[in-house]
Image (cartoon, rainbow, N blue to C red; front, side, top):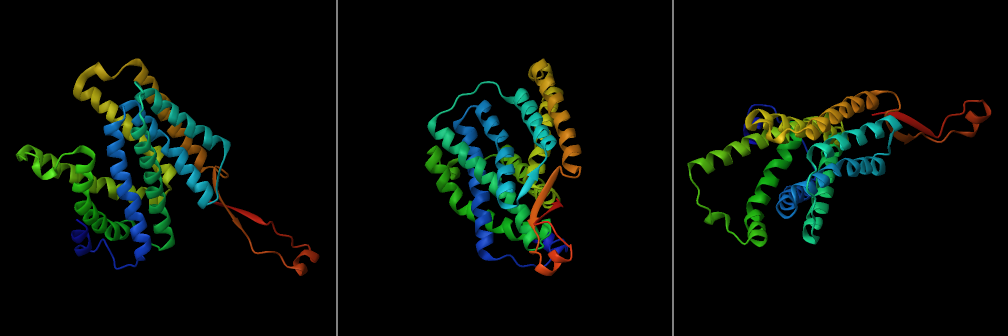
Length: 278
């Protein structure tokens, strides 16, 4: 697909240093494997809790590396979103040692990958299509080579021994097609906003999944608890959008150049710290 995008002119010639590319691919591959293994080894309830923890981890990365400062309203709105999604999705929670390790790897690698999407686009002035053009072929090649071996180590089953039929091939092709749209939308959204905003918006996906489940499978999965959780989560998302867009809602702290002695004597005193709107 990246070849098609390059041929059609959406991907322009650009540069991305090899060490940066390899770091991104490493984070992205650990994210894919970690999430799938976490879902396989953990209960759905603990898997959802692990996914919810990606927002605080993403916030921590932005605070440490980008010197982002959140207002009280922005922090509270994020907590409301987490509460709403937790009420919707978290039911039975059971955890074991290897499942916990898989969840930790999944959460941190996913948060780092999403942070790196924003970091690389900003640092190297790459558009979403250009970054996808650099990373997707390398990531696909590495997963194609290493995936079957990792899969066999974890499941003790060989992927080539699976009984492929027309139905399974159609669903694999459909999954890959949807994945292209998912990756592209992720790159566009994170490049335009930040990883934290993407995580908050991403929980709207959970709400849509629950609503679609109601339309396809009836009222069985739509209890009062789920409806209440959806309502809380949507209110939290609206609050987050409003709070983070206000002055001081989400700011990057940077340091100005030191003031000269002459400026101080002439009364032109400048602050050592300047807040910039993200």
